[in-house]
Length: 194
Ligand SMILES: [Zn+2]
Image (cartoon, rainbow, N blue to C red; front, side, top):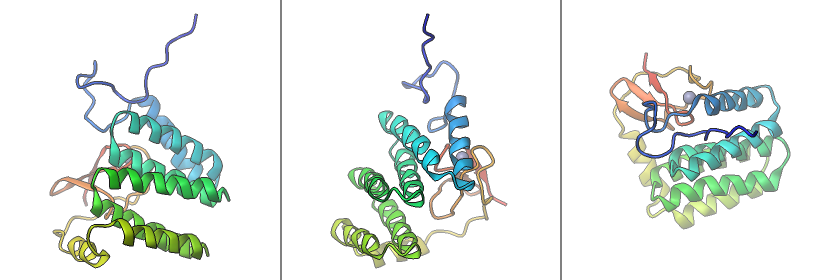
């Protein structure tokens, strides 16, 4: 008899066990931990497959920012694995998700990081493509988003890695839940400022 696999993400509005919206089930959390670990160990192709699987799960449940972040990380893993076309497509998929949801500040932040990273890897043509994507799609000029990001209130510093999933924590990628707590963009756990 086949055992039914439980979904990675809690479904519906009232999960059996209370799981805070945005957080992952234990099995997904372990897969995410593994993806980050593979990434750190330079096993990029395997990391990419896991990130994409998790991203699709998040997208199925309408968790746009989380799905986008996972697709973007999957794209980065592909590029580092030498899978250029797949990497490029995944980066577009992540940005498009954010754009379709009108999350323009996130599109700008993620897009600028992509451009910087691509340039750092010598992928100047692809970097230009994403620069043009931003110019074409952002409703306001990049400078407006840069200024707006600077006007954010000062926040306490965060750990470099999420203690729950091991994901890299970048202050400009997190959402703040209150003055002292941010949300991990990968697993949704609370990150305490120091
Ligand atoms: Zn996390």
